[in-house]
Image (tube, rainbow, N blue to C red; front, side):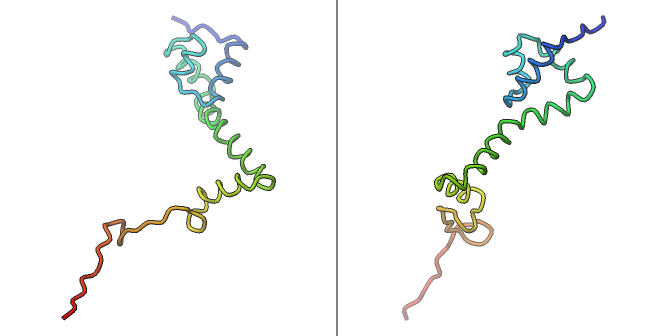
Amino acid sequence: MENKKFTNEEDQLIRKTFSYGASIKEVCLETGFSYDRIMEWTALDNNAKEVELLQLSPKWKAKKKLVDTIDDDVKNAQWFAERKIKDEFSLRSELTGKDGTALIPPHVSLD
């Protein structure tokens, strides 16, 4: 059985849904296409590679927005630094021994 071609509107709907970071199953729910039909779409041309890029879109937009607003928003700058420059700005301090093992205080004899 020959695969039915995707219309331009169907193609755009699938791409748009993937660009929200949707999984294949979520694209099925949003578009009403079966899992097999979406897999047919991903098998076309370079669509499988494009899906990976489309799914990164929300993450990239969030990063870009955050970095774009760092100059204007001290809270954004602080949040970014605490999470991405942890060695200098982390609010959390680790109290562990070598390689993350439990910290064992030395035994001091008072003889």
